[in-house]
Length: 258
Image (cartoon, helix red, strand yellow):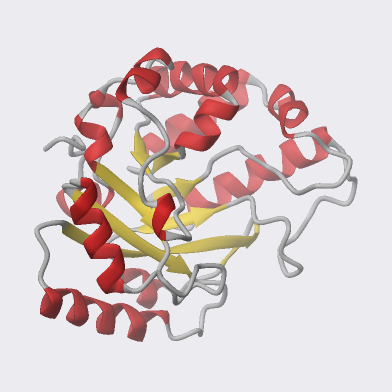
């Protein structure tokens, strides 16, 4: 699949959770070695005033100076602090080629959690966070969608069972209308294959597409941990994927293999 020539979720060393080896030089070298056509570097933007816009301008200049056969898109990974509060400003979003938004960073102390610690409560709250990301007008891709982990006493699979198809279809139709895609993280797709087959079916009926990304925090994680055969067995085709920046710039979806 030509889809696997792209990886749109890579963190540089600017993200505190990324390894020291994640310099732009090393990321470009490894991406070239792997034969990628396009990559996206998306560092965490936890606060509206964190210097992200300046970082993006500097990174753009550095990438241009370094030169690369790989097309490099520069974005960020913002997050929902609550269903009505996103972590970046409109000005910062304008500096990005695209904006990933995580609606599931419940492990961070400043992110709102539901009052009840149950699978149903988290499922309901997450759907509000997801809709808030779409309604922000700043989101191009919802990062690691619908997967909630690190909640003591609450299993991810149990949360999946609490999502109703009707609610998912409503939100995914809304996402498609706003040109918001979903990230497909191969690790999640393989680990939770049953849910992702279900999600793919609903996405197709809603007209919502995917962007592939590994959420790499180390050089070895830049390689997508999935084969073309595995992706096909899950039911995915090339036309299920788009390029996030081109989607925004052209006002419509552009296939990942374009």
